[in-house]
Image 1: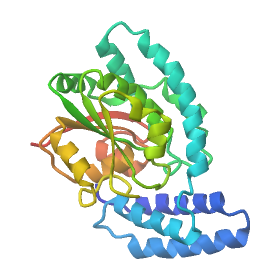
Image 2: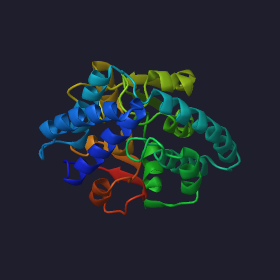
Image 3: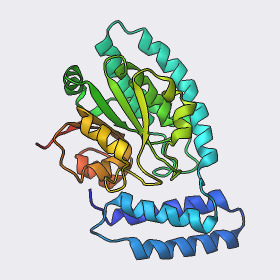
Image 4: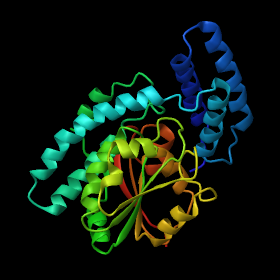
Length: 293
């Protein structure tokens, strides 16, 4: 997905939100906003993917703020809230009679976990309120039956994780998948936005799950850029029978490629450009099978 003019508004909003997150006095916020907006004007080009612009922008933010993980406190908060949801939803899954019913419900839970996105919404996002609201929604694009058919033929899956906090909702799905196949779970190597890193994956105990291997995307890179994927992750991608891609950043980047295997995009369309690309409404929930032979 190529960048849209509307993406500039979203990036500008993020700059303002982070200024408020990092600085308390007006002058520091002014200085930060002016510097980062100047950088945004330099890198905002129509032939790029939004994640490429976002990666450059947020690396610059880390550089001038001298803060390698500006979203750390927000990630900690979302992990705590999501862990409580995980415990409740886990019991609901266990009460379902069949594996297929559990799998369908876990896919739904994974999608609504994508609500936890301080970059797309606000650093003041009421995570608890949004999650409870989405639990009563339905999927606008629902390819879960196709997912089940693909899973029956699969021995290995690669799962590109998205945000901290959200990772506990992914765990519900990964636990089920690991009962029937090997799962490569890919996090960010270094902090960027509120994306999940090894630290978040270990907090969710993904490293302790049988048949689950933790890998990374090669750095502080939003989405997936195959130029920077480590050799181990590239081999895992080649080995995998199909791909699970969580969130908008992974969608924006992976939808630029053509694959010889199915890719399942699990996300909430939190912005208008992504919603238009998927032909859904903003805020719709999506489990979409992408496969161009």
